[in-house]
Length: 393
Image 1 (cartoon, one colour):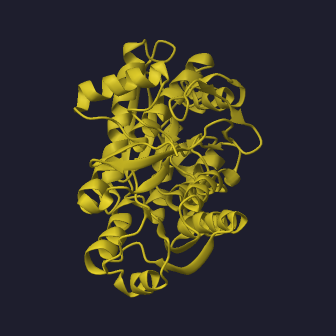
Image 2 (cartoon, rainbow, N blue to C red):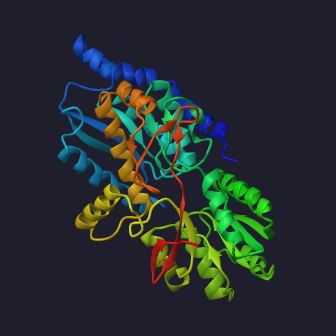
Image 3 (tube, helix red, strand yellow):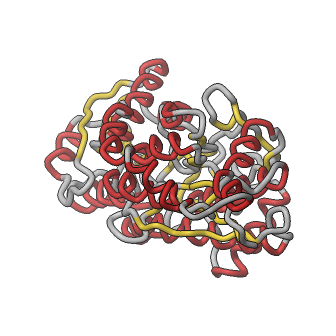
């Protein structure tokens, strides 16, 4: 299961530095300037959203996709007038989506009074290491990509519109059950992977799907043959991988090219990296997602696809749209309240028509008990002719 206690321990060593950093940042301010600092804005025509993300390291591909969505969203917000007359900016912090780096950089964002909210990181364990610091400082942490259902447990300033793994893995197990009676499952050995597999396993049992083989693997694995040989030899109707894009490609390439497995495969992620790494072996792969550029019927989502194509020359996927929506979300609630730290928190608590680009589109609101989106549903995606498209079973 996702271990929140461990995440809190990782961050505890530097939480005590928040007060000193915040005091230093406000030193010398008085009157209106001091009040502005308290509310999360400086005396400036620009307010910023802080971004913690993997610009470098093993998850850099996700950081690249996120940045495309972030930058396009800021362009749209500012073209539409900004937030209450102020220009919106982004301040990027490269963490490699590593828990230690997230915890170490968090006080810097807290101390920067121009930052009214923080988005990120890619991985839930890394994000959770920073959440206690933002929580203590009263700075909204918007974990737009964090699907661990316990992610928001840190406190009332931690939010996410991401579909939880409990929901994703139910959909995953349900589609697997339609084509397989017995399966082999491998999953990534981290808090996220173990929790996601547990949800999958519970739903598979309800469906009567027999798991004839299971094994975890380390995130930096380069040879998965030792665990995939017995996975193949268990003679499953399908193989399921619960992990990220690069390891999903490693699993299917090993199965197809080295071990001669020809059956159905459920795994990978909707990234160009996965498609390139897996090549022809990706064909027919089915995954759960939240967005389809070619399948969406929502008018604003269709406009987003056009704008994204015009800027980058290709269709956006799940990671680009969630990043885009995160900035749109926060700008929208800031315009409904105030572009301050307190205004962002109030907006997420009170605004009920936040624009939704994922799923079926429309709008959404937050469940105030768990601070997760109420009505975003997963969709299924399949690789056809080298591209992910919406799958309707």
